[in-house]
Figure 1 (cartoon, one colour):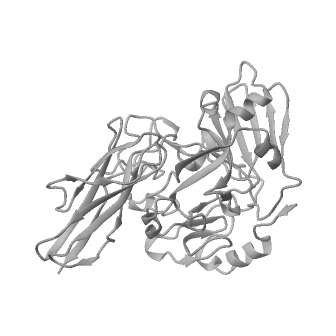
Figure 2: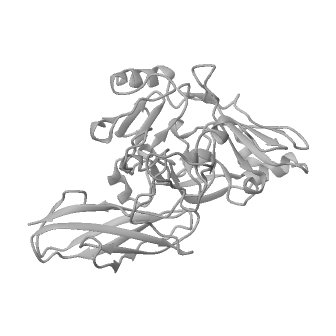
Figure 3: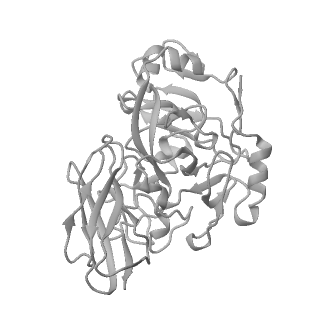
Length: 397
């Protein structure tokens, strides 16, 4: 059976139509937030274009009014230009090798029949989500808040696969590779790794469904790694190979990329360089105001419901507080349905502005272990881990 989600011709036709707005090759050019356009790739609704090849597509924030992000609206982030556009499931195998008792080659049928099926909801978020808000500006894809989504994932535990293969003593790291590849031989293949102790945690998943349907091709069909609570750089798409190593993996995408300053705030003075770095991993606590939008015009003495979302890296949200006067006073918002510690939660705050004028709305989330959001920008040269308290201005007439 050939699972053809869309053809390479379809993809190239879409990408070719917008090359004037995006990069050709492995290193994308920057499209600034004010210049972004809506485009539609196969299996996707209208998303905000950052680059076409490799595709970087951002979710418009109005989709976050929904607790679960629709598959067609989930953001897209690839690093290498040669991405899979169709996969023959009769030929595809997930290969497991390295420091194990026996090598495995698992078909999709094997994944669905030989392992316990697990399902949970988890936020997937690009490490650079919010990068365009950093001051001074940093290089890279100029994401606003749309490089994230909340998805219900279904698949099998990674540890069950590793147990079937028979982990040997002396295992240190587990490396993951996908079907994407670089255009140029000098570009490193995207291989990520997890310490073996992390890899065998209960919630690390090889997912083959999102929101009850097969993964979309642009989001990693036929299977992808899901590392809930950690940034999506580890969530390898179109997974093809899992290799158990006896030493720490030192490939480019671990040793050279996706690293942050190795200090308590993961930040340094703007424009400087860190003395020491460490790989990024767990997501920070965040809240985002979804409605009303920046610049909205509201009526005096008319009720309005302010709403947004909040989440943290594997810890539930304890509370969200809201200010409508630029941070002078704060009141607690009402939290919506709780779908687990990896999911985001919606929050709501009812407000009836009494006087005309400009108002600054702010929201701040705190998780169950007391981690919250800073008022200041915690700057780093890669533009990772944006979680400053954001604010919007509205006009009341």
